[in-house]
Image (tube, rainbow, N blue to C red):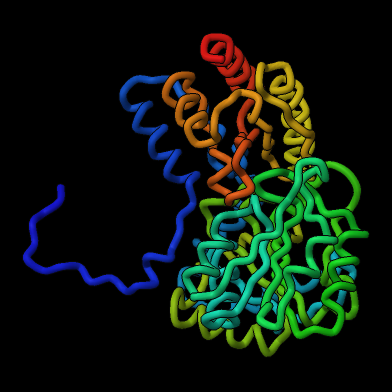
Length: 396
């Protein structure tokens, strides 16, 4: 309950530039409806519905018993940094040293620290739109200029590299790439990534390559812009454990970058979080070096679910949906319903009991779309399709 106060809360102006992540707001609303007795199918939150693999859990429990409960180095335990360096080297085909790795509590700190370390007022950052909302939020928070590059449905939601040259100016400091992509499931083909590198050419522009869904790819092999020799020192790779190993609540991610930048990112860790929890880092070593079969099974299941859900959506009046190539989201076009994205998402939650996100939660170019997470059981996905179909028949 709010209490009366005689003192005005005088927030810093920058707080007015800080956005949010709508998924958590919708989750809270959906949970409130459930407490009122309403049945809700949760397709709003972006986390795997699988449990963390048992070998990783056992490694964490063992680490607790062995005393890994104290402060560690701000950049991460040397053992985990070595494991990450080896993993990234083998999966990206590059040579990574431990001093190029910074371990952080989740993936977002790498976005946050990159902006804090690099972006000054008026600097421009090109970012995908629709895209993960924290990109735009942090650019604005730092006083930078957020420059959206549109992801178009007709290109399977990958950016059109022909749009990029016109967006680059002498104030461009950073370009953000995300593949596989949230919210669309789009995957940038290798030729487009190579073309981005050619367009950047010899400009002193860094790339934040968000590769958090790199292991949740339904076809082909993941390709990182860091693999391109001329881009190696100008790329910050963002990756982590949340999506690949169903470890969202463990809060552990990492960045791979040139050593001089890693030093500054480590200072930001020291000043904000001190360090990432030590016992979770020991579990992270097991995640990277242990049995990977759970990851393979989870990816196959997400592919199966997305194909099932897309096929079902395409039978519902007013909906049309392309098949995603990675992650665990589908992003249907709803323009033929005659509804705007946010009112439709609200109506589906309140009236149909299906929690989804408005495409506008991911930027201005998300209007006309909804995002559904298929990180739910096939039975619940089937029930969600039935509820959506019934709602459209009654309301369209």
